[in-house]
Amino acid sequence: MPSLRQPVGPLPASIYWRRRAVILAALAVALLLIGWLAFGTGGDGKQQQKAASESTGPQPAPAQSITPGASPSGSAITTRPGGPAPSGGAAGELNVTGGGSGGSGGGGSNGGGNGSTGGSGGRSASPGPSPAVNTPEVMALPVCATSQLSLELASAQNSYPAKDKPRLALTIRNSSGSGCRVNLSHENSALTITSSSNERIWSSADCIAEKVDAWAQIAGNSGVTETFGWDRSRSKPQCATADPAPAQAGNYLVQADLTGPAGGPLSARTSIRLEG
Image (cartoon, rainbow, N blue to C red; front, side, top):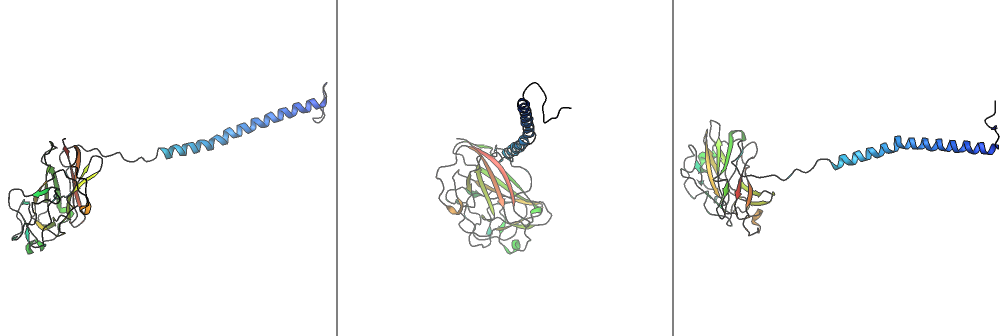
């Protein structure tokens, strides 16, 4: 049997050795190519998959779309645009309408006030008796719990023609069978208006003349209602200088927040549209 190390044939042995070297080199290249295809591109595929997953990760939420409509149902609480806070913290009358029996007493200065703060709007009373605030009878009541209260925030109109001032009504209801007290001060009960692009336009808590409590009774299975007006002006926290240009035509979100109830704050929302 011919030896592998001694090729047999009509040609010189060197030619056979060169042929063998070429075949072995081709086999080596083929093996390297197969290995690269099996392992090299697999790693790149993982990198590409990882990059794709990162690029398609959680995306920011789209801007909220606001359309005018009635206020949503559910528990929440709100307050009034504008107006100075009750003076001195003494017993007085809150400029709201009581939906049931209110606390007795209540002489002295008007706690609500119809004035505006920096032209930002104002709060006015609905027809009917106003509940007393900060009286001994009121202060003897327990603080209303979040579970007792519900809020109804509604606009007089869904859309307001140019130069018309939006008006909103807030009703705070006590669904329990026993009376309690709630703090309706401008600091504890605030209304904030933002544009459809989430720009903060105005808040009733921006320019508070005095930070004074305004505790009012809400009788069992009853409520109180406040009405508010906004003159389309702008405001900033701490009464900082705001853009003097009035709010432009468009859709606006109105949110009311009440921070005083036992158990945590409550809030309610509705939306309005301003025509140009």
